[in-house]
Image (cartoon, rainbow, N blue to C red; front, side):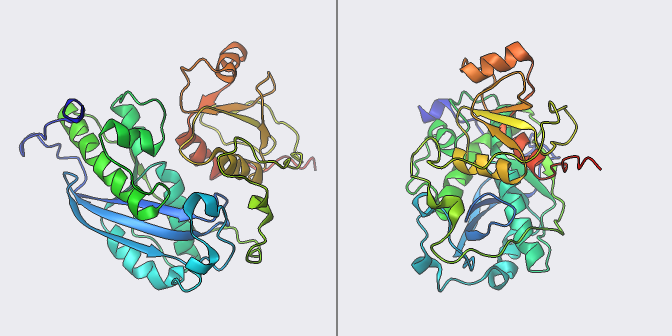
Length: 330
């Protein structure tokens, strides 16, 4: 029951002085997960120091390209055609973020997409810290079956109305974040805050023609795998990932269990970074990505047997931001 899952708010004198003074709970829907993908909708719920909602804001954004996986976000070319461009909403978006900690589910992804849009607009997002609610739920040791937003929402009794709609996802996250924040304050838990550094570089391939985006054309909603085969990785396997170091092009990466974003898109992002996406795990696998390292799946069991390094989805997202180029042999 909900009353068993919430925590009474600490008194004013007990509230941790080191906690931030305000939060911006953010969700963005995008054309995909790659460096050159674009934001197509964004929502912000502004919260005070104790997680109470102050206001909210939502906008569509015309990406000037194919909208990508419409079956996920529901935003078609017709819906987005008359939407403002990102530079047109950048100032209002920045006003919602200014002076606050950005809060998101798998926050490194939302931050990177936002930062790249601002870089394209020759501006800088006024965000200095971010907080990932996946990391916070781990710090609180919440008994969640996986790290999807729907599981976090269900734990706190929050009802989702339109999954993958930026405004509703942000609302759900804001409502789940408040009891998480109260629990952290009551338990003296240090918030998992990370620095946000502005991006000055991004990738922009020629925008695909509307309705002709090969990266998504063969996907089917709710399918476990894309129906097409990915091209073979052009780089040799440099060996296993070492903690504290960068991923390197050619590394073999396997995935196991639920992910907070669509598995197909996450795998495509890895492939576009130059990694070899493996469907099984062997002694040659460089890294296993899983949000549940204690599960008994065959990949997790084999990873233990082979000593394969394991990271969660949020950490993998951070590693993907800076993949080392393959050796050229020269």
